[in-house]
Image (cartoon, one colour):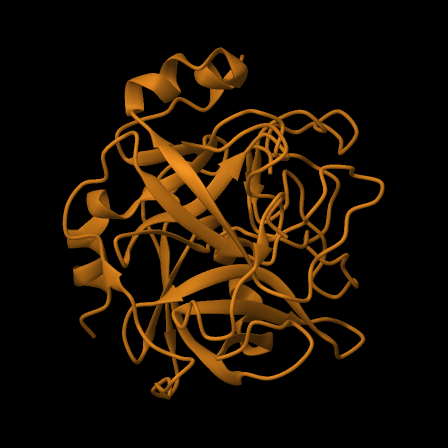
Length: 287
């Protein structure tokens, strides 16, 4: 996944986060939603898998949800991931929700299934809260919480995940999951039906800031200690459609899939660091 807000499907205009065309932005940062640009929610969208990942076992990630929107053809389409953090609240990325707020009545949280085409329970959105400092061009403060209208029913395949209890060090293994594209070939991209998972390694903030593979984006999208960078190897990483999903360490959600330079091309992937936002999350999920 590129430096894109990994929001998965794309919502409408062909404008990248830097105002260039889709062609011009092919090698630039995108949110993991799968865009640098967005499409109208009424348009049908291409599907979005983690590159180099593998199928998750049924129920392996009970906290993982799919965020979906109903298009003009009355088809529910996945556009981002998220993490259940309580019976009424889901943690995701601000770049996932910001373009769709006016379509909230057409959006759903789907929990309890690894498959995009079947299973799971749907929950209506009641409220979306994005960080007040969310910066779309730089993709910083990329965090949001969604309140659903009724309690999420917990069970064998559905449950909440704890928030990071301590800061995440560099050099440790973490697991990311999602339904993002499984190929970095933009002319032959396909989304998996099955939830994908991938074990990655965290980088220290300084390692990420100094990574030469980020090129000019070190200046336009500076890395801070409010973010976590990960890397596996060339051919593996997040991609469009993974946005908003969890990065997990020791059974806690420590990161939110945010952006990369698409996809799986030997460059760091960037996540919002959950530990930096514990007070914000608590404040905005108390009601």
